[in-house]
Amino acid sequence: MKYIVLDLNFLKQLVQEGEGLKIEFKKKAADPVKIMKEVVAFANNYGGYLIVGVADDGRIDGFTDIEGEKYVLEEAIKTRISKKIDYQIHIVQVSHIRQVVVFEIDPYHNKPVFLLYNLKRKVGKAYIRVADKSVQMSKLIRRILKGRSKDIDYVFQYGELERMVLKLLDENDFITLNQLMKHGDLSEEEASDVLVNLCLSNILKEVPQDLEDRFKINPKSKLDWKF
Image 1: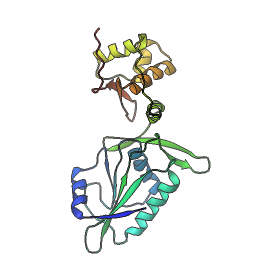
Image 2: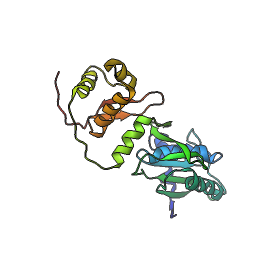
Image 3: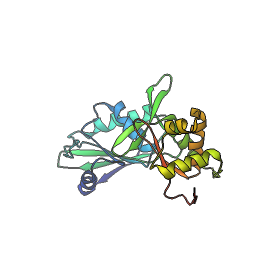
Image 4: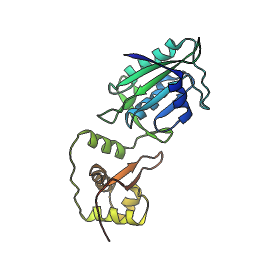
């Protein structure tokens, strides 16, 4: 692992942005397994910065001995994450005796990545970053991310179910899996399949949520339809 020394201005810039889609503060590494939820969520999305030594309110405390914090987190990344992710470590000097450690997590190409809670059975949960929170990923979102990882060009097929979904979205800002099942009298498998295919064809954009995922028209979609 390559350690990079960065100046205090870099850290202050991140702290000033506040916690969000790509930034998480931790005062200390008291529970490294719990902190891995943030690491996994960053890897499953766009990457991000895990900043250890900064309080939730943005107060930069740092540590007089950064090695212990760094060590337990590196060990957790090595043992508790289902795949070998790429990351960089930045050591930031905040005073003549105190330092902050910043883990810069790269987005992982072969999603999803899981946090392993049971090491013997390799059982875990997948998380994804949503705004300033790391939420557990649904089975439906996992299917979409796994499909994208295959790097296949998916072709949009305009059938009865697809037309129904687009008509619903013409009348609503978003839809959910349960709404689609109820509206179309569809099984969970049928509704899931059409949502996955529309997302992989870049017609829809998934919006992961803590309770129930939402699906919207992808603003980058070039599809034009009228009802």
